[in-house]
Amino acid sequence: MDLREILTTTRIGRLAQISVPVLSEEDSVQYAAAQMRSHSHGSALVCRDGRLVGVFTERDLLRWLADGRSLEDSVSEAMTANPQTVTAEDSLFSAIGYLDQGGYRRIPVVDSNGAPTGIIDVKTIVHFFVEHFPSAVYNQSPKSKQTTSDREGA
Amino acid sequence: MICPDCRFDNIAGADVCESCCASLVLGEEFSNALERGIVAHAVDVLCAKRPVCVPANTPVREAVDLMLKHQTGAVLVETDGELSGIFTERDVLNDVSQDTSQLSDGIEQYMTLSPETITKKDSIAYAMHPMGVGGYRHLPVVDDAGNPTGIISARDIMRFLCVRYANSRDGE
Image (cartoon, rainbow over all chains, first blue to last red; front, top):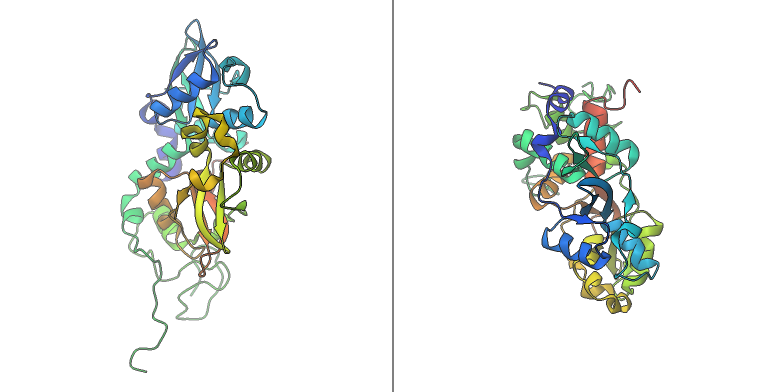
């Protein structure tokens, strides 16, 4: 099976991370960062009435700190509003298209009501490739193409 | 020997393609084009971004500004020209965001010491190993002397594989 076929037949729902912090708009940036730390995840999904309205990422946090803004401010001010989303039924291929062209590192996964169900990111996709082609990746010598500097017996 | 990747006609017995540097000897055991490709191609073909390098005593605030300016998630820390550490967005999240007074501290306190590295001659499959197993998002590329020359990200790998082996940019 070639890669394109694998990517078009694999559903995002199979790979999406579900252990992602979900916040409401009034939560503070400080709380968002704490939730991201405790989930060991670089982003948080921000919802209003159960629907996704924004995503807050490590990059947003960086920008917030660089601008000297307060961590007590609400996360809705610091988040990226109305992000690109995918659904669990979409193919991995379409997610890769968005990640590649949009320059995103991750895309929220939502259901038909707009409620967040997880997130799909670049790192997970690379991990998926490694799992799919383990013999090529896991069997690499510590140093590739080792050669001796001197001719044997010379 | 015709290179299976770039079709360059190499002299018989050559181990490495003169044109694209792909190995002409490795990878024969793999039946799949992608597996052959990631073993035969060196990290060089990813055209690693030039890294943002800073000394270890750089204040966190300055490192954060540099990451935003260069739109990168990591800066490399150099000591006497050699790579000594890596400081990433995750370090900011884990440490600095708990106490903003740490923005004035040197990044040496929060960076990851002696990160996993690769050289540009290593295969892409070899680079995928620490990313897939260690979960690293960035891998510094160093030369033989340990000087950082580039940085590759998980996105570079995803792009290479999907554009080359799944024609992900076709039909647009």
